Length: 88
Image (tube, rainbow, N blue to C red; front, side):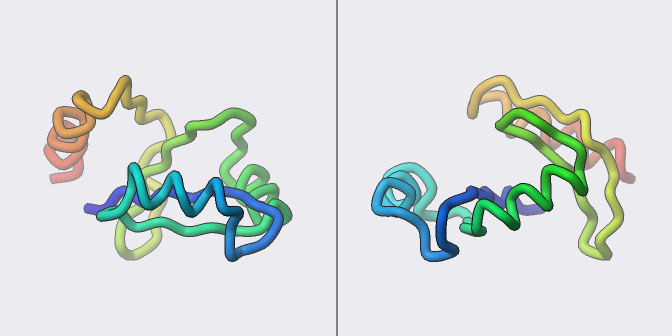
């Protein structure tokens, strides 16, 4: 399983602030920068208004759940293990 960080920016290249944040906090993670227009399309597709927003999608593109809540980075491993058990 992968955690993918998606951010909306004016351009798909991202701002200097976006690049600095990714370099500092997400250097070993999968990141995707999309235009604000594409981010709006994601909001419409997954029906969310606020961020962060979490989705669980299988490798074959099935939406498993949209109610995953991660309260802090330390809780992520626990929640991920719990989700893996539920998917067995």
